[in-house]
Length: 251
Image 1 (cartoon, rainbow, N blue to C red):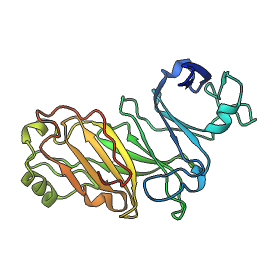
Image 2: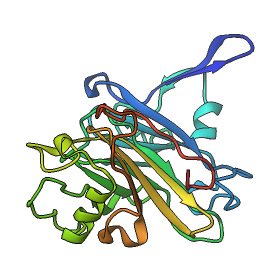
Image 3: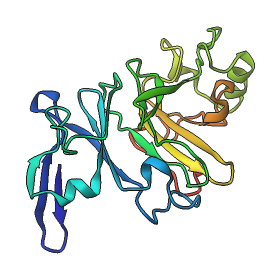
Image 4: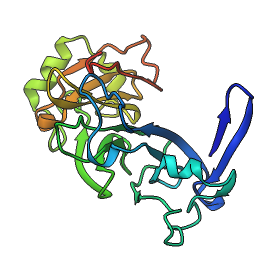
């Protein structure tokens, strides 16, 4: 990790977050802190009341640090990147192995202060067609969201939409050639997890190898996606490599 002073254009802090053998850092996210706005829902709650640095490693491990403490230490150092620290608080607050070894970047979301709960992390699992939701504070997987199967005549995966949902997606103009031979949308290439104040719920957005994206309400993900861009977002079925959702959590 390198922290830059943008006025002076130089590195003011650097920390090793993962061992050299881990393969490096895939993605970073800084969330929480006093007065932080998480999308119209007010200040963050619980675990995210202080500023937290989340880091995703190529080895499938997600680690969480107290960002302010990390920056208050000397200009150079090892932030428990080669282990769990030495008990003096230099190591991560949380660390958990997710089984995500592809290049899809994780997404982190905190709850507003009036809704008790730990921050959630979304990223694909060892099966890259399945998005997993992790409780970051406890290091536990709390949900799995499977992409609907769209190949003709093939059963939807367990926990996914039934035949009526597959038929509805077809009415939206899904190009069956995108699913030919795969029975689905392909690997998950991008995710975005956002708190939607108007719904009082966490929404998960996922983009797939086929160029399709879908949105789920995590309270009822087993019922299938709330919406789906079924014709491919950019035409031609190009993979959806990145996305972001605004503060409303809806668009």
